[in-house]
Amino acid sequence: MTESSRGGAAPAVRLCDISKRFGAVQANRAVSLAVAPGTVHGLVGENGAGKSTLMAILYGYYHADEGHIEVDGQRVAIASSQQAIALGIGMVHQHFMLVDTLSALDNVMLGAEPAFFLSRAKRQVRQELEALMRDTGLTVRLDATVAELPVGELQRLEILKALYRGARILILDEPTAVLTPQETDQLFEVLRRLRARGTTILLITHKLREVMALCDAVTVMRAGAVIKTCAIGDTSPEDLAESMVGRKVNLGRAGGAAKPQSDTPVLKAEGLTVAGDAGSGVHLLGNASLALRPGEIVGVAGVSGNGQSELLEVLAGMRAPDAGTLHLAGRDFHAAAWLDPRTARDLKLAHVPEDRHALGMVLSFPAWETAALGYHEQAQYRAGPFGLGIDQRHLRAQTATMMEQFDVRPRNADLGSSKFSGGNQQKLILAREIGQHPAVLLVGQPTRGVDIGAIEFIHNQLRRLRDAGCAILLVSSELDEILALADRVVVMNAGRITGELAIDECSEKNLGLLMAASPTHDKTAAEAATAP
Image (tube, rainbow, N blue to C red; front, top):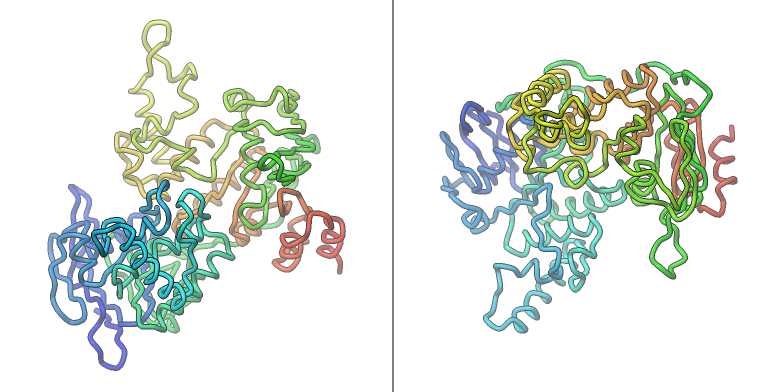
């Protein structure tokens, strides 16, 4: 076991030979880990490697079958999250544990009210939170309801809540999975300030650049066991990736730009406009036009929240624009009579949504139902008199085949969709949509919250689909992903397309110019980006 400590001090956290089994699945195998006080310690590994289970044991959600835990050099028993909090351990989950209808202040207070009278309690909590925000840089609008807050502020609220309850050891589970690059930078500044004031941070992440930029040490897990623990200066992203997966991983480009198989677009949209709030004069989508040709991947780059989501929703038939036209598979649609999702599927347009939980699956459904969601009325899935029932045997068998082809783990078609890790949920949705052999695929954030091995797999699947003649529109907040996959790139800012570049014209500088361009200076920005 490798221990990291400063000045001979006892580790802030020490896990000794932790093992945990769920039925036939061995989630943790004799895991030993020590984290120095006042450091950021990364915990990386593929989906299902046992990272979250290990941290759930430390936070008291699960109890280890074997092994023990030490906090500040003292052996402790943690049977509940309340006991973990009492020991100074806090956890911020990937999916926030907040009540949408309550204010940020009320969410912090909930279950930890310091006084019997509510008004007095609120005054006391507000004073403490304002002091904590000044000290840490965790700025949150305390009187706004959670439903009104953007994702980055929700993340800060969760951290603030943990610190208010006395957390000296902070567990963060995929904290940047849903953040924009700017929000990620802001979070990292906060975490550095917390480290400087002595907070110990355990960071679960798939993003190796973040590990290298923020962490002092890192532990790699695979198949429930620790593969290595080392100081961050003794490793590299390539070394970590190979340790995580057990082989070399390539996430870069695989050859040059693909040549479209036809110059005739299979999808052509013109003048797509979606108005914002009434009277605001703001457009969520402003006069956007683009075309997709068979056998190419068109990337959409831009900071999240600049119209990419609305573009996907309109093209998928999930919302009608206020203006614009669409030509798809020989049919024309206009704002007053727009495409709907069922017609889109009939016209061989498939959609992998940005938010897999809200739009891609029903979490309470078993995997075999998720594997047919949206396509369950097709004749191949019908059974019984007049085809009114569903052929569950056929669906289960087909789902098992999908799971094998897309390496979905565990390969259990009856397991609830919520029981799969995020990466395996994503692969199941991709298997469903790609399995329909679409002519057009709209895919949003294909690798959000997905481990490095699954990223490589998903990228290869998208390239294979493109090479088979599919036209793919790829929306991603990861610029590296756009540069690795796209054959040409359109850039969005403030709801408008500010430029288009062939992939060999793309660089972070050129794309950054277009991403920051004012919509009123689109032409100037595009010319600047392509200037020698």
